[in-house]
Image (cartoon, rainbow, N blue to C red; front, side, top):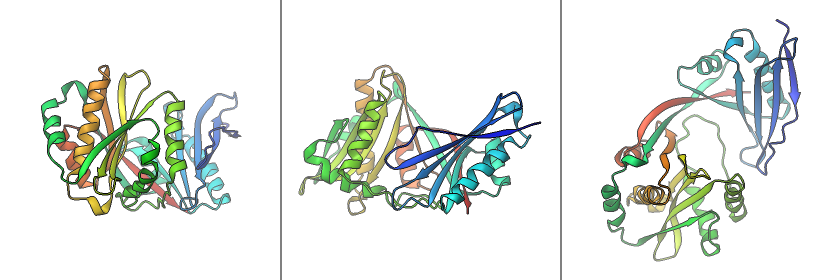
Length: 293
């Protein structure tokens, strides 16, 4: 089979990354597969590239994926990347493909879903109303309020030590401009960002947060973006408290929303226990693979 790999112009450039793209096609210019390589550009992650590769099922085992992978890996090396990461569902063709091409499994991610119509609202109320001395809950939709912006940006370091197992993920630095830009990006695509935060009553600073994105039309499933508690405030039940409030808010405000989705590292036993206690049901598992260059 005659196979052509064409480099494409990808407009999906952002403030923290840019993306390269390739199309595989046959002699009749029929598309067979594609590959996208995201190059992270911020200091702390500028060693990293993220690969998304897909081949039409009928065209697999014909070297299409291998040729696309070769193009992406060559580009990663040309851009001085230290490693390439890619994700595939466990035991899928992509999972086997990456392992056979020299990638090593570095992280297992567990996905789960909470069916909102089945939520136990009395359990949520019990969790939320339980006293958490020294703390109060705050919440907002969209961009963080000005009076909490600085402390919210500072609280993002709560995610710095989240379990990533052997992934060479680097570090992400947050400031006020970045948290505002992230909220703006969600708004511009028509979705709704909701944040619940635990505030240290003695200082007025944010001790932890949880974020949820809901589709613009309020149907389908919402997606949890992140939940974190600063190390000095852990062990007080703040994570479960905030997440329960986030669920209650979604349940009350979006009556047509079907469920809430979350994904966490399999090794993150603490957050897994929180999700299990709130009624999340596992749906599937993926593996993150890494190729060291």
